[in-house]
Length: 433
Image 1: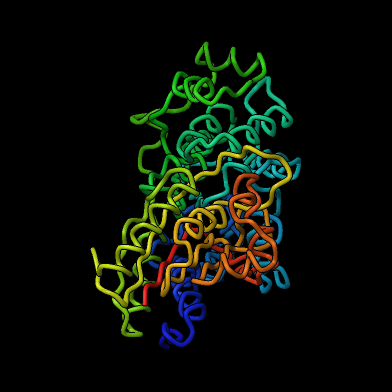
Image 2: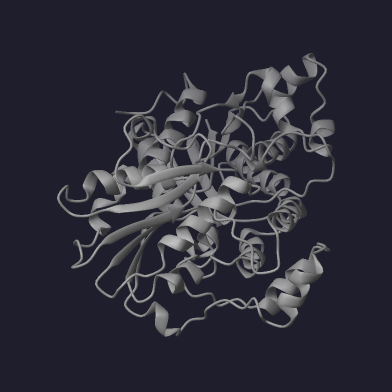
């Protein structure tokens, strides 16, 4: 199946590329090759993340029907695939809040920690880990409360900190992340299946690495908190300063014999989108799958590249599509605004493009949720600013108050998909015709 015509239907074409990227990352398509054989003992499935429900459904469908299988996975609210919700399998799936933890996430993390106890060397633990697990596995370190974790998490999300920085702090203030879940499972063998949502696909960063050794330290976490001027309770400060909250490190014998498999990555999804574009006769260029930085500034840089292509045919000849991924950040400077990374990127891009003819842009999160809103992202067209002006919407004012959602919504330019049941981070496509 080819994409919609990029000339006659630019929006449809860009949406087809996004759909191809998401399809490449679906657990049902990527799990079979990485499943080990059933063990001598029992098989326990534990996991967390926005793709957790779909990963559990895939494992349940693929695991031999006569082989014992049980477990618990926590995913975001409304992220259980409808078929598995209607007919639950052998793996229990529960839901909790993201990106700020709630009591349901704390209870799920506690139950997962309890299930990990008492295993033997004959047992196998399949850990299903995807982006979002940091918030969903909400088990505070000793002396901390869920409210402490929530406050620190909110501050990190609004600070502009990069994902590896946020997760460094999160894992050191957790009783289950940063390799601690795998340590609880000893002496059972642990096989971790990962869907990456982080730049560089580092296993220790994805969902704050609950099953892999952690190379970062308490001192690193303290420096990050100081860098972004984030206040923490005295119990957290004591735990970090004394290294009482230190995580298991590389070389720890408890990780011996464990296996880690990356079953879906941002790069694979971008290449799937590029292949769909080429099938439609459009040259496709993948810039990078690990772009970071302030969303609006990254949008300006992408706009400059698209303008160069549109006006001078450099560095790429048109028609073409330019693809990128990664995880940008938003430093929230105003209260009350709505939007996420994708729409903030698009605001910066639209303002910089100033209606450049022939340039159409789609940016969306591959989990179907941009921040905490009901949209995956939005689109920018050559007439976006003109249509906004006709409605009395001043783009820069919306950007200044971090209110991109309310800029794109009245224009009918939001991309709404609902949960996709996977998550390989930001997806951006710029079509130049």
